[in-house]
Length: 147
Image 1 (cartoon, one colour):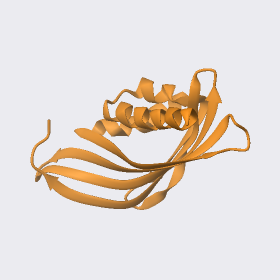
Image 2 (cartoon, rainbow, N blue to C red; image 1 turned 180 degrees about the vertical axis):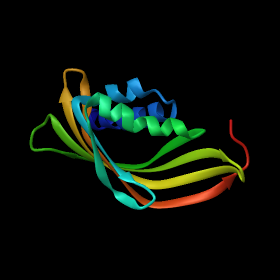
Image 3 (tube, helix red, strand yellow; image 1 turned 90 degrees about the vertical axis):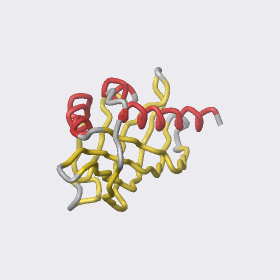
Image 4 (cartoon, one colour; image 1 turned 120 degrees about the vertical axis):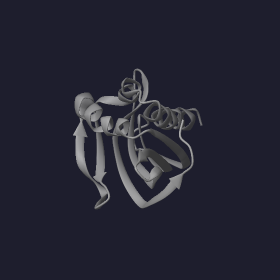
């Protein structure tokens, strides 16, 4: 149970830090040689672009700052212990809103997604060693106001 709570904390801190555009906090949740694998939406929804290490991950996450605001909601979390007590896997379902101001008004680009994660226990606690993002569906809808 303590490990599950600690893993969940990593997942929720990641979502919050991305929404706050706090890239340094996001990077602190990855192992030093961690990997982030992203799709190329809207054409490729499976994880295909590999970003390893803090510099590449930071550059990949910079794309989130090109929209007006984001909101990542964690919908479900399933964790599996590895054969080694210091390793675990997670399958995280989430909904990500990406709001942008466009000529036609405010648009909410919604991703229904999942993260397939690998974690390792380090001297600093649980860290992400690999996170692969798959988008299950994309929806676009108007929004009324944006802070």
